[in-house]
Amino acid sequence: MKKLRVLLLVHESLVPPDDIKDDEDPRLAEVQTEYDVKQALIELGHDVNTFGFYDDFLALHQVISEWKPDIVFNLTEDFAGIGEDDHFIVGYLEMMKIPYTGSNTRGMVLARDKAVSKKILHYHGIKVPDFEVFPFGSVPSRIRPLPYPLIVKGLREEGSVGIAQASYVENEEQLRKRVEAVHDITQDDAIAEQYIHGREFYIAVTGNDRLDVYPIRELVFNKLAKDQPRMATYKVKWDSKYRERWGIDYIFARNMAKGMKQKIIDLCKQVYRLHELSGYARIDLRLTPEGELYVLEANPNPGIADGEDVAFSAEKAGISYEKLIQRILSLGLQAHKVKQRL
Image (cartoon, rainbow, N blue to C red; front, side):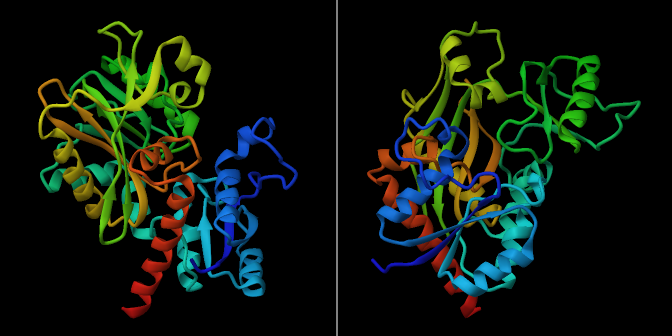
């Protein structure tokens, strides 16, 4: 394996301290992904230079020009504090003709906007929840009839930001209140989408042209009553004590109908390609009791900490964490070579 000069690009506040020595260091909680990826790159024998970025392209240009990396491992999730603008960073790397990991700009833009994503999938005959977008700053006096219950969330937010138990609304009065709350929380448009009853699956996909789909993960709710909504709220995603208290867990999906696994694999590949994604992504689905699959979201550049869903799924497929990180690197180099030939 060729030794590479890898520029690890992270948010300026998430540069892992060099003096972290063990997994018990409390500082790891904030920089787990950045630390895990850096350690894996070092274990793989690559030369790693970590650069903290916020919005200073001049500084990024300087480090690229002086250090001359073979590839940028992109772990940024926002530009100047705005999550939906992270594609600007990738666009800059493309203009610099520097290989990078993860999704291309087009895939990021198409997938980040939940309404645009659903329109693309619906056009191609893929089931998605019915939805309505509420532009930031106002709620119309008249709202078309919608299929309650609904889930209200930020149009372009990731990581379940703005999603709470109050996001589940059953009538127009609740809808209006939650839209206003989401506007206030996210300072962006809100989307209200049909709540789909059923099992929630997360599927990791890697690749550019040839795609690999990893074993299916499922979010399970063991202690909730049957009539309670099952949602991946912010607390579900980020609060382990909350998950433990309510019997919420991430597991590998089991007890699936014959042929359903292959159906999910084929669907995830189709969704990945329709969004023109590259590198790696996670597709979120719901499976209804009637056996219908609905696509909730396509997530470019999902979390890849050692111990999160993507890494767990890769390990289940026989791919160690270091091999996963190397595959992501190799896909970035491959995509760059293809683009150079065009």
